[in-house]
Image (cartoon, rainbow, N blue to C red; front, side, top):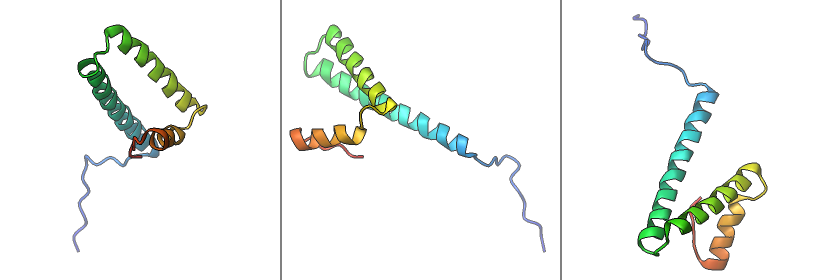
Length: 90
């Protein structure tokens, strides 16, 4: 019986590799969403550069609050849905 050939370029992924990839994908998706949001604010809502900087600072602060656990992202999503009818996919 023939011995099964192993691909010499195959590298098994570690849990750390997978976590790093998940972070990179999450960061990229967040960047895309922010680019869309700020472009709409600028082009469609007439926000000035000053407005964008102020809003961006607030978004960064809120993101840090979520990251540190002071605020739950699920709670933010629920409030947007319950109070404003804005449904965001999880």
